[in-house]
View 1: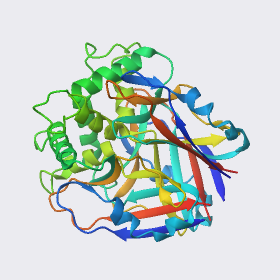
View 2: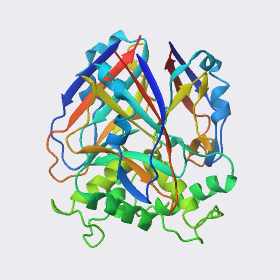
View 3: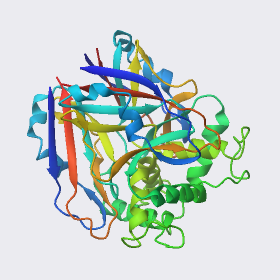
View 4: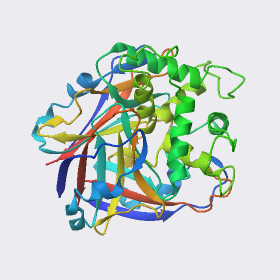
Amino acid sequence: MWIQNEIKLSPKSRGYHIITKEILREVPEIKKINTGLAHIFIKHTSAALTINENADPSVRRDFEAHFNRTVPEDTSLYKHTLEGTDDMTSHIKSSLLGSSVTIPVTDGKLNLGTWQGVYLCEHRNNGGSRKLVVTLQGE
Amino acid sequence: MWIQNEIKLSPKSRGYHIITKEILREVPEIKKINTGLAHIFIKHTSAALTINENADPSVRRDFEAHFNRTVPEDTSLYKHTLEGTDDMTSHIKSSLLGSSVTIPVTDGKLNLGTWQGVYLCEHRNNGGSRKLVVTLQGE
Amino acid sequence: MWIQNEIKLSPKSRGYHIITKEILREVPEIKKINTGLAHIFIKHTSAALTINENADPSVRRDFEAHFNRTVPEDTSLYKHTLEGTDDMTSHIKSSLLGSSVTIPVTDGKLNLGTWQGVYLCEHRNNGGSRKLVVTLQGE
């Protein structure tokens, strides 16, 4: 069985956001899959997806601080800054984190660990609404 | 054909460990798949999976040194340190490396390059036994 | 439907290269898939795959500069340097970026965003021809 939906996330502020529920709302068909995989893909190069801790908001704030420190908005370091100081840094952060996550599906649900959630990593100051493609497959 | 097994790794010390054989022992069904994919997922946010060099142990030690240098256990940098100086750093290292790997399956085997192995990246000082979900599919 | 082809890329210079067309040329069967996934895997541990901006060459040059700065070829930092100063650094850069990308397939095409392309990340000074395994599946 294959299910593929293109979805638009609500616009998010710069930073790291848990979007597990926002994704699941768009693919109720997941209930039909006993054993399978969910692939979630972002169609942008300045935002990313990752899986991390789903409880304490300080984790997401520390992510923002860490990536700002290691990929600094110092225009002497980068040439591709036409759209602003957050332009090239967003591209680099996005490849460090990745453009998709793949999660096992078991008994109609994402088979995540207790503390895992899907993050939207919004690296731009004004990234707007981001498009994802969610592909579910299984039996 | 779908095969999905949840497995528990033996506890590993902090650092980088080749676990290719430990995984394969738990999914003997891979022999039945001529063409397919193997997805290996870790159900934790302070340890990760990656693919890298499977021979010289100095590679894994250099990984440990590199990530300790670029994600330092300096509590002035991070707020989420309730569980110790290795708490937030483990979350960041894990998202840099990723929570899953996907590997082609060809003629009943993982189609890895000669020098490739699957690493468990254990970032905690006492991570204990880690749970993986291995999903094989193919025909 | 499963299609799996092992392909050899033409040798590339050190740096970041868009290879979307070079890959698609080798898997014309993608046209037959209405809904599915494409998995692209590199069989090496010193080169990587990522998805990023497909237009301005300065993005790829900034990638090279960024990773050289954050994973410096300083032999005092790494032990695994038998093959040269670009040996261990290539392994680390490769795990930061990843050994595979997975992309949705929709209506016979890779369902990439307007600005997305697949990058070969060649971290060695003389990496030679790199082998990929492309696995397409869908219906």
